[in-house]
Amino acid sequence: MLSEAAWFDIVTIQDLVSRERYWRDREDWDAMRSAYTDDAQIRVTWFEGSIDDYIEGSRNPSWDAASWSKHRLSPSVVTVDGDRALAETSALVELRVEFNDTLIDLIISVRLLSRIARTPRGWKLASMDAIYEKDVVTPVYPADRLAISAVDTAPYRRSYQFLAYGGQGQLPEDIPGDDKPELVDALYDAAHKWLRA
Image 1 (cartoon, rainbow, N blue to C red):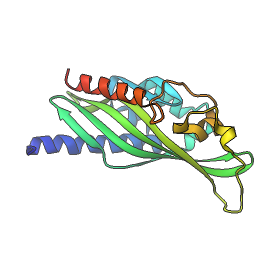
Image 2: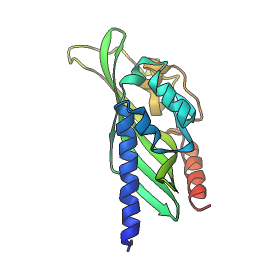
Image 3: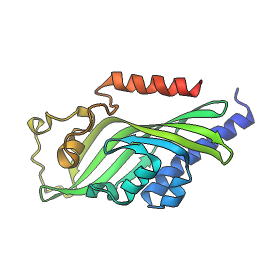
């Protein structure tokens, strides 16, 4: 049975993870930055690097849809080991964009795997990696039709085929996704080694 202190850590971390995405969606960049350690690293489809560069890229996106994305989060599953923790959060990334003169909703299913460290300022995110599961696309207006076939999306990975086809083009091949379980396994292995280091 978990102690009261352990439950407090878990709830605090769950709140931190939720607030970080809340602040990002509402473009509260200073609050978002406060959720991270100084040397935190981020990896998503469109970015890999430091938290400061990630925030700058989010503030001034090179891809228009990035500025309109919103996140719907499930409760985080948290594992605490001393002053380190892992949190895995299922999420939907929602974008409304125009594609081939048709307004569409693109929804990307991901799992956000975060490393969290206890610091003198409290629990802070040390990294966040997105694991891509699948994406779906639908026209906003039912009368519209999207002429996208399996042939069109064939060059792209199944975990984010419409994201790649509709906006960003060919994405890095080493992004963890359920269509490449070896990459997901390597990410989990590294995260759990970090947790117990």
